[in-house]
Image (cartoon, rainbow, N blue to C red; front, top):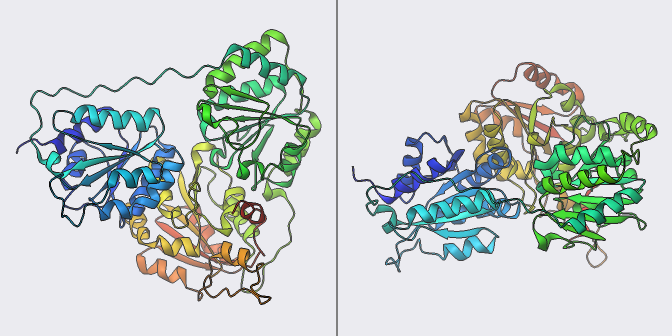
Length: 554
C-alpha cells in the first residue's frame, strides 16, 4: 500500500505524543484516523461530532497529553464547533484534524472557509500545505496546542492527504517547551512588600496556576495566606487546613466572608473576573489586588489591580518565597486558630444549614446532592454541564483534587456535560466518573449516552430534572412584559421519564423524588457497574443562589 501524507500526519502525531482520538469518521478523515489507530492511539467513536469535540476537551483537561478530534470536511467540522469553541475559550490543548476540500474543488458542497470558522471561536487555524511541509506543519500545530495551551484546527486538504509521503522521512522530534516567563525582580520585591504589610491575605488560583499548586501552597503557608480557587481549579488545595474551596458565585457563606474581609487578594493564573469575584463584590474596598499571569495582556484585563507580575506561576511563587524568606520569617497572617476552627466546621455547603424545599413529588437539589456525595466513592472525577442546577454538583460533590473536576463553562453552552464527562472518565479510568446535568442539557446531548454505555465503564449521571431550561425560567419570570407575567411556555417542557429513556438505552435508570428513592443508587454505588442515570425530580429553588450574580453580566 502506498504510504500517503495521511499516514505521515498520523506518524508525526504519534511520535510527538497524543493521548486519545475522538471522532465521527467519514470519507475525508477515514485514512488518517485509521492510521492513528494503527499506531496504537486509542479511539472512541462518538455519535455526533459535537460530542467528540467535548469528549476531547474533557480528556485533555485532565490528561498529560493532548487529545485529537477527527472530523469530516465541511459539515463534520460545523457539527463540532460548539465543543471546539468551549475548548478554545478554555485554552484546552486539543488538536482537531479536519479534512478539507482540495483547492481545485471550488464547487464542492463541502467547501467552507474552515480557517475563518476556526478563528471565529478563538481556535488557531493551521493547515498541512503539502507533502514536503507536512512534518513541519503538524509539529507546529502540536507545539501550539501543547506549549501555548491552545485549541488548534489542523486542516487536511483531501488532495494533500492522498499525495505520496516523501521517502526517508525521519521520526518527528518533540519540540522543547519554552523557558517559563520569570517575573522582574523589582516586581517580586513589590509583591513581597505587600505580603509583609498584609494581615489577612488570600490567594485565589485559577486554571493557569494549577501546575504551580505546591509552590503556591508553600508561599501561602509562609505568608499566612488562605488559599482558594476559581471554579475550574476546584480541588487544587483539597485537604489543606486553610483551603477555602471555590471563590465566586459558588462560595460557601464562610468562604465569601473570609475573602471579602481580606486586605490582600492575589490571583494566580486567575482572571479575577465577574465569576470568580462576584462582579468585584468579594474584594473589599480596603483590599490591595495582585495578579500573576504568564500572558501580559491578561494583567488587569477584568478589573483594576495594584500590582501585576508578568510571570509563570511556578517561577513567580518560587522567586517570591525565596525573597520573602530572605526578608522575614514565617507569618501567622490569616492562618489563625479561630479561622481554622471555623473552616473545619463550615467550609462546605454540605455543612451549611439550608431550608429544605422538598415536596412529596420533588426533591430539594441540596439534600439530594449531599446524599450523593456521601454514598459515592470519594475517588471520583466530576463533570458539570451548564444550567441553573450547576452549582449543586459543583459545590456538594467534593473532589479529591483538581484532576477530579471538569468544568466546561467558558462558552456557557448546555449539553456538553455528558460528553466532557466521557472524556474525563477516559483520562482518569482509576476514578468513578460522575456527571451533573440538567434535563435540558441531558436531552440535548443524549446521543452520547450510547457512547457512555458502549465504553463499559461505571458512570453516574445525575439529571437535575425540572422539566425546563431552568436558568431561563428563573431569569425571565422576574421580567414581566407590558405588565403581564412573562410567557414561559418557550422554556418549559412536559415531564419526561428520563429513567425509562436510560433503561431503553441499556443503562440503569432510577427516578428520585425523595431521599428514600436513592436506595437503589446506594446499592449501585457500593459496587458500580455500568451507567447509572438518576432522574431527580427537582423542587423549584426560585433561581439558584449563584444565578442572580451570573445574570448581572448578561
